[in-house]
Length: 346
Image (tube, rainbow, N blue to C red; front, top):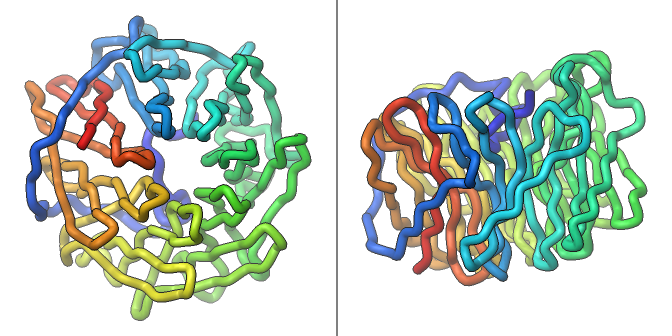
C-alpha cells in the first residue's frame, strides 16, 4: 500500500538511509496534540497529519484498531471529518488547498493505487491515469494540490516504471516524463502550475531534480558533487526546497533553490535533514532524522529552529506541513509505535 511518510520515491530507491545525531536551536511554541476519534492505539496505528492550509484545516490519515487506513480533516476548532473512498481498502489524504479541496490516494484490496479529489462540499471524485498498472503497488498516487484544484503526483506503469502527472481542475490529465528518464516523479505543484520533482536517467544511477512550468518548459539541475538531487516542495514564487546526497556517509542534506537558480544548502554533514513543506514566505518545515527524530522550521532568513513533541517512549517528531502563518502540523510517536498528531503555532 502507499507509504505513510512522504519521501521522494526515486531518492528512496537510490539511497540507504542512516540515522546519525541532530543539531539546531530549540524554541518554545504552542503545541496542541490530537488524535482522530477511532484511531487505533496499537503498534503502527494512530493519527498521521500531512498538510495544513491557511484557514488551519489539517488533513491526513489515521489507522484504526483493525489496521485499516482512513482519511481525515481537522477543522481549526478541533472537530474532525473522516472519509473513505468508496470500496477502498485504505484512504490517505495528502494535501489540502486554500479553498479546502483535498487530494490523496486510495488502494484496492489488491493494493492497486488510485487518486481522489474531494471538493470542499464533500463530493469525492475518483481517478486514475490511463495506462497506469493494475498490479500490486502500481497505479496513481497524487501528492499535491494548488489553489485552482490542479493536482500533481506520480503513476506507476505495468512494468513498474514511475511517471509524473498533472490533473487539471476539469479532470484532464497530462503525463510528464523527463527526456531519457527511466523514472520521473512529481512531488509538488504551486499555484502557477509549476511543478518540481526528481528523475533518474542513465548513465547516472542516481536522481536529478527538475522544475516544469505550466507551459511545459523543463529545467533540470543537480547540486555540485551530488549523486542524488530531488526537488521536494515548491512555493508560489518558484522557490524549491529539496534533498541531495554526496555520499551515504554524509547522509541526506537539504537545499533551497531560488527561482533564479541560486542554490543554498543547509543541514549538517552526517545528520539527515529532509524538508517536507514550504510556505508563501519561504519558511520550510521538515524533519531531522536521528535516533531521536526532531521537527525543524527554517525561517526565510535561514535560521534553523528544531522542536520535539514530548512522548512516553522513543521521541520521534515529523513536521509535514506549514501554512502561511507559520503553523506546522505533523505526527509524533510514543512507546509501542503509536502515532499522534500535533499542531505547532508560533
